[in-house]
Amino acid sequence: MVLLSLKEEDKDFPANNNSQARFKDIKNMGYTVCIYPIGNRRWGKILLPLPLNAEMQYETFTPQFKSRVIRLFNGVNAYEAKQTAAVALIPDHKFSEVRWDEDTKVENPMTMTDEEIIAKFQLLDNQRNQEKREICRNCVQTGQRGKLFGIDFYPVGVDKWDENIPKRGKRAEKGCEGCPWYDIEAWRKAVNEKLKKQ
Image 1 (tube, helix red, strand yellow):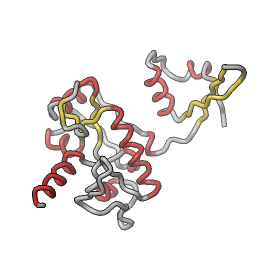
Image 2: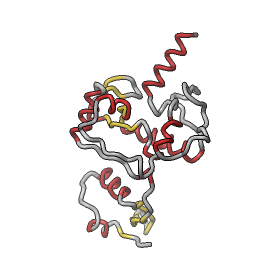
Image 3: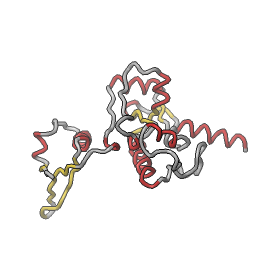
Image 4: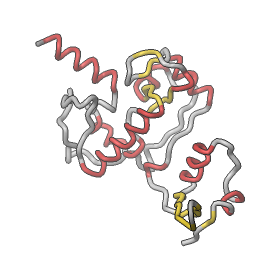
């Protein structure tokens, strides 16, 4: 196992003045930044190489594709159900990347139809996107499906992952249906329908 100092990583990673983007680049290359004490208020940093796994293989979007998705959803943040500034929005895959396998990742060409985009994405801000990622990771690890606003309601399935459905790969998407985080707008509509019937 080869460890790199943070200075040494300059020659292996493209320069990026945005520290968050730089750390994401480092992570996507298969490294974890480890920070350790080396004296009074001084810290050393090394890069620990880790094997890439499915949950690290985030898709990236061209600026044109991202703008198209935001326009298509009228800039509505699915979590808040209201229009949000485009700069704060991220196209979020309804089917979480932590459940992808090698055959699941596909490109998102501009030739996708509006219907395909609506079926595949929702808009979230970065904070909710990160929250969803952690909830989905926990679901993969424990089988406990996520909740939204603490509400124990699943229009499809129950609060536990269906053991008859594989944990990863395209067929795993079936197990995500009914989870509020999978399609927040569909879940919200199901909640409202249930309330109308009471």
